[in-house]
Length: 106
Image 1 (cartoon, rainbow, N blue to C red):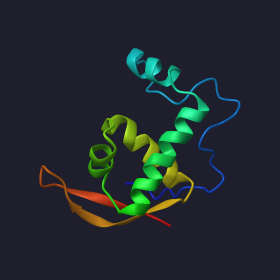
Image 2: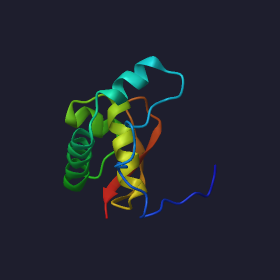
Image 3: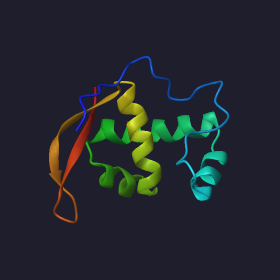
Image 4: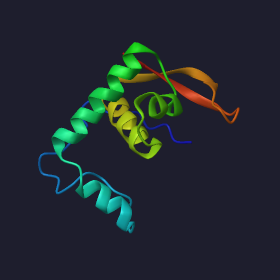
């Protein structure tokens, strides 16, 4: 595991970016990225942040609570973490019984 820490200077969405980030070489990931606009990303980030603010949550709880795919919820949560808007606040078990990070609003 690396000791990387997020920078408050990292943008949630770069005005110069051609599209949202996607997995290299994945046509489905590229198509999903192409379907997003800066305002879409910001709205999803806002929904995730509001959910976490109301109740510190795991990625699984965020996706379930908002009714969105985990592959949509987790990247939005990572973007919020990179901006120091949320922090890890312990762990708790998921449905599978494995421990997952609990995220809370700063």
